[in-house]
Picture 1: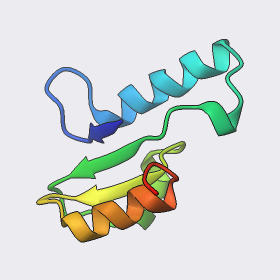
Picture 2: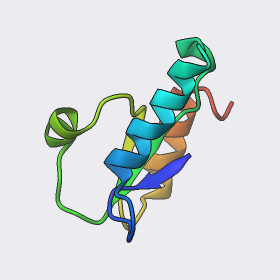
Picture 3: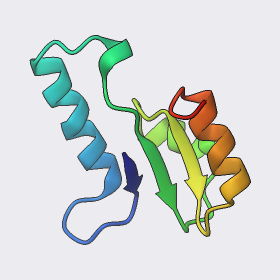
Length: 80
């Protein structure tokens, strides 16, 4: 899931929190949970994100650099 941090009705941080809560309620093991890549046009660093969000698997700054994004997806096991 590519999840934008800035969304109109619910921000990406809250959406991620709800997603992880649902997975917890269904006792989804960590290795089976959905992979979440946070995206943003904001000038945030991953260290800032670590304070605000937990449970994300990667971060991509918009505009998306496709080489970096492809490398991230490979790192997460989403591409071979």
